[in-house]
Image 1: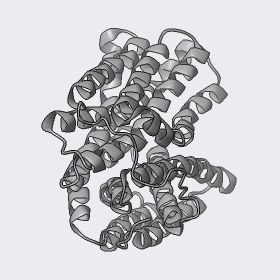
Image 2: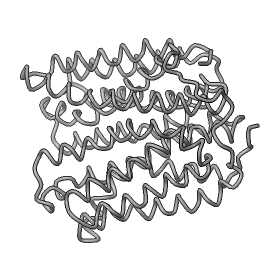
Image 3: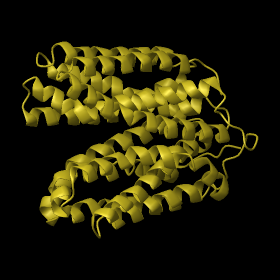
Length: 384
């Protein structure tokens, strides 16, 4: 039976969501100082930047099993504890400890990525779109805060270790609020035949590739947009500001898309609109990047920013039990994030091998088209 979640639980979900990206964006924003301080190679730096996506994919496989063994309340609490410990651990010693702490923190994030949508479906069945919107908006806001506030924190506190480690305080606050607000979230992930696999369900695979492609688009844009704009004559400061806009747009868009999606039996029309926005922006960046960079970034940011919360809420809309929600969430995020990790690498490889952006931008446009087609199929009203 579904539990009706209260305000304290909703606050716990929101604060937990706000912690699911600063672990990544805070370190990325001071990565140059981290590398200089540790005296590490470019290879080590590349490995560090790859850890989050790989961990999001790998650790997500274990989330349904942990949810069944511990129950949702304890599982999410354990994930937030892992995140807090990892954030502290990675600032106390050298390169290998930084890697290990980042892995631990991202493992906690991966578990929350899968299990919090299950909590939302189970605890807020009549407010699914609203709470999912708040959750994804908080996630986007947390990502932006991690990137924007860590450099000033470094200047104020005097070291990158103190600035990056300070985010453990926010994680600890989320853990305390979660334990206080989740008293009624005691059930395990149940409600479907034990051992059921979604690997043979076509709709589950459509959802998985859809999720993977939207993440691939986001990571590629966030990783390469400044370079694209820079080659078009946009100065470094403006390019950085435009990148920040693409991230921040995810906050208001997340508050609008899931509630609308939850009201409609089909989300196909919404997918097509978001896909056309993204494609228009990508084509603008491909053919006239310097003509109206602000417009192209706005279009890409609106489309890309809407696809993530839509993919999250569709996991709940395409399932009928909390067990299937957990399984589909784990499948989409584990395989999807592993798929997403290939996007920025392939995009950059094409740029380096051809010496121009043409092939890379064609790949990006192809991502958007494939994402829109699969999302249109996934948006039809049925369940796995």
